[in-house]
Length: 126
Image (cartoon, rainbow, N blue to C red; front, top):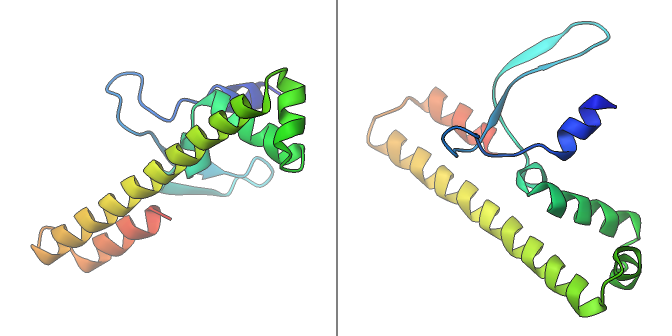
């Protein structure tokens, strides 16, 4: 359960410089197979821990804002406002990814990176 607590507190930004963190390795605890490379965090993992908890509660409650409000002890408008903030943040994260795609294509066009490098970078944004 330690990993679950660690994931709940996961900060998507570097505590040193503030840049976005990436996963460098995934491995199977059962057979030892591992994958290495730059694996970006999914958009939901890049939300603040309290926003991820809210999304989980929203999904578990079957998408009922009324039930979320009851569970949190807050009014429906408060729950709606919080959901709207999370929606806005997810859209911002999507726009950041789009900006990175354009930046990668620009580097390719200017000859700063190879086609293979561009493909790797673009695949990592998904």
